[in-house]
Length: 250
Image (cartoon, rainbow, N blue to C red; front, top):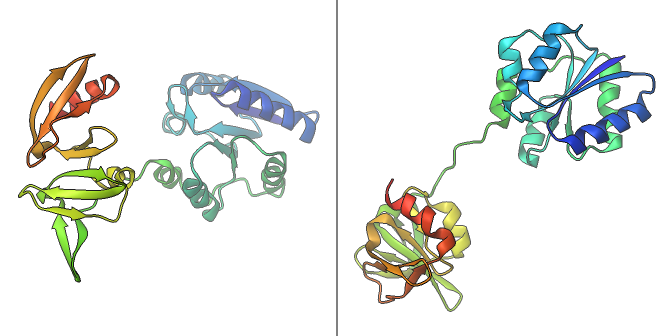
């Protein structure tokens, strides 16, 4: 059997080759090819292999570009390091895949599917592409806060900044009102748009509208003054200074 490996991680390719030599002795293993370009050149100048092991992310892009440029009839077993959510989607659609690092038992199961005649994926390559592309992030439009026994919503556009104090997270509105929120700052950071909010330091996440003044400070740091904030010593570290300036200048 002729097997082609298209994989841009050397250790992963070597491990797969070793496992294939143990599992399918006598097979001719070709590759390793680590780019879209080299894979296309190989497939155009050689007979199509009986089976292809294909990494999704190659050194020069997503491997689906191969199929956009040439016709490939060989059955494929995908190799991927994508997260478990993507893997479940692959499994749900009955697509053969291997999650790196490759497990010998999973390899044997995938090869068993191949030997039993299930050589074609049941969904199109376009559907596969959609499964692995990152989903657009969805950010909160409002936060719930509690005022006595009453629950109120605060629209995100009305929030000036979030801050942490004595292990409690607060938000302060553009009007200067302060409320407790039931999230850590780390959780809040993932909930708000990075175009509008920036993590200044361990204690503050600020909206662009709340940045009142920015000053240069010692040791290549910046000092920020926020509207409706009594803390005048909010510092941006040297490591975050470039990202902060980029955010301000968007």
